[in-house]
Length: 265
Image (tube, rainbow, N blue to C red; front, top):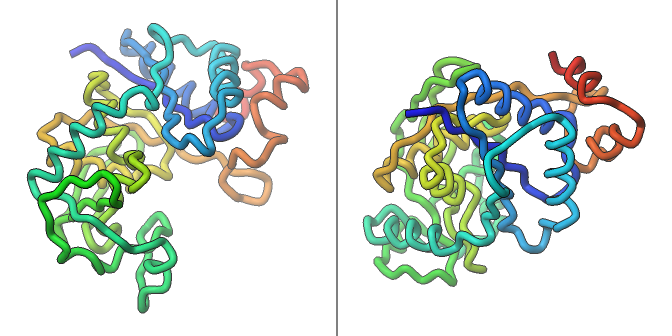
């Protein structure tokens, strides 16, 4: 199967140097494999995703010299695909409805945290088993406690995460009718025939969650390449709120793509 890659910005702010390096890496790996690259707007959060950020991301990527096939794909137009996957997961007993708020989980007695700093769900609603697929409820994926999820990352090598230790039951559907990041990217990457996902190292543990979804939905997962994160002057990971390092600001300062690439090579 020929190489098919993607870049998938979330338009909740302007892209920064870290995004640039990751997207350039995806472009570079695709080009080296003589493959096809696609652009996907992960714009499911209607409250935070803005058209201006979406357009800026497209312009920034073109300015960097990144080329992709066809028009950008918008997740906001693909609800029916997520609903179909959600119903399949419900019917096979992989999900359960959850009434807990984020505050409830944080305040749970001695609630442990996973590798990504997220509180591990204490299982409060795990026994609320139902076959109903009520999309107006929050739903979680029931992870197989104690199972090791292992995969080979093309950059960081062998990876292993333990269900219930490194991460717990995770959200796949919100009561506002919007799928979680985990479900949406699995459905989209599978439907688009993506053969390798290139993204930041902060999503390594998300890969373990997503591999569970691929298996539950009888889908073939892609390969993965996670890039090291870029840090700011105080050692913190770059964030969209750091406007000084946004690609828009750097372009306005007269920086060239070649100058930026010298900062991450």
